[in-house]
Length: 407
Image (tube, rainbow, N blue to C red; front, side, top):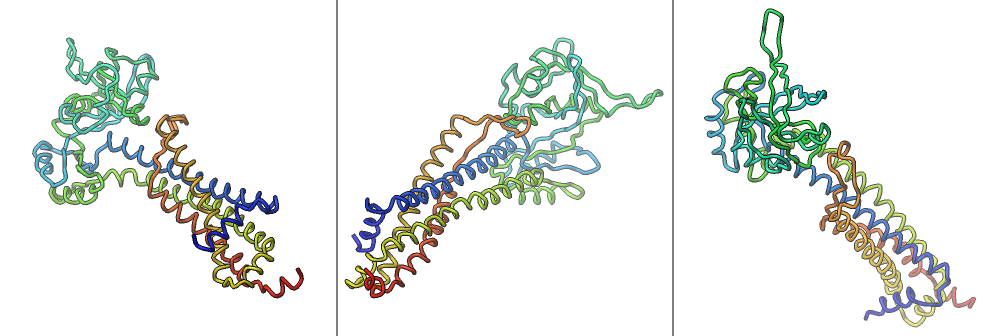
């Protein structure tokens, strides 16, 4: 064991230190632990929200959406087959979106009606893979009434169940001598999906592409081609390739562009959280500076004796450096253990519920990251070591003759 570490450990563990010095040392360790643990928990929560929202968005929305602004897409099957050959594209499915008025049991609200080809859509859209009531069967009933799938939040709110009938009114109407008359059709609720994303479960419904075209009063056309990719992170490059291959006047947008404001806000929140909570660790570093300064004053005679016996000033400096490292390491280890333990338990058992109407998820997701732990450790230890510089220099600058003269 090195001489400096041996002396530093004896100083920290000495039962003869003043009570106030022991108390300040304990507070320094607890301050570092509190700062580290709080930072781990806060960053795990931020990462959890970002990854959960991203996973759920990618489960119910397209990675790339190709549209023809100001018009519709004709001959979409041939175009989908052509674009489906691009490297990295898993599937290309046509879809038709329209905002409609949905009525049931005296209630009415605007929802997004998505027309899809069920066999192709269910392979890429996780919402259609999570049917919690009824079945994914768009077959018309005996009276020829088409079926649709509604979200769980809407079904629960309106007490809607498979087999019920709803009325949908489309603003795309037909011109009559009495003016523009909207299209109105009845649909049978065939099933209920639960995507886990509140906005979709509350405001979306699915129907067949032909039913959507009939409701909108259009021919065999769609307004978007939706791409699912093997790697969603490559959406930007594939979107540019799709635009070039589709021809002029086509526009491709990625899931990152469509949700840019959301993910930018989460990234900014993570940065602000790290800065402000990191101040707790900075304050704990000041406590380390105080406790070491007090220790220099308390152990001035011992330092003078060591120097008179031949201890070099560099060794005295390293004694206090080791004390700061020991305090910082102990606090960091306690903080990491407590922070990761809480984040893992709370994330696994969903201990903190949320209102999904506000936060889009029903619980606080915690996803602790090992990389965050690395830089938190480096920052905490850097602050702890930095706090030892002034006390260590002060201890190494003591003059043993002046101190021992008055002892």
